[in-house]
Image (tube, rainbow, N blue to C red):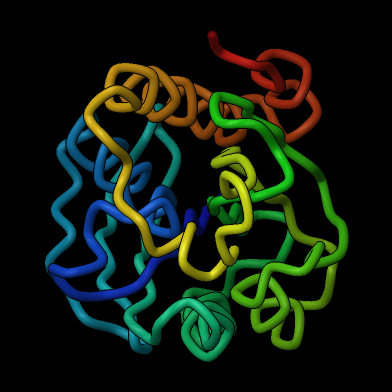
Length: 189
């Protein structure tokens, strides 16, 4: 069985530490843990192929900018012949408090433009891992918030979130989405 694990974000150094790029951060953490080099461009994404707990895995970071992520994810899934149920998309979620991790088996885009794009290519029946970034403070525009870097005070919790995301992805790969949801849907303090 082969899996495609996709982290969403925006390409380029200026976006690297943005809240919107927490999906990229999770893929980088997973790749580092399992020594999977992210060194190939395919279907508008940086990809790496390897094995996690004896399962074939392709990791991907679409380089299309967030709102066009489906233009990369759809062709990648087709190229590698991976059905939607084995494609896990990792991304930021405004509607979850910072520190909250939520896996879902399927669902709507919930206002996330990157997910809207992927749904246009894969349909709604693919698993996702949402990493809470919380709502913007005061009257700040949501678009400005997601493009803002995590601050120094948030970094220790961010590291814990990314570690838990890696564990959730590993559980998804080895034991399926239901077990991953049961073990890893939580709020980290």
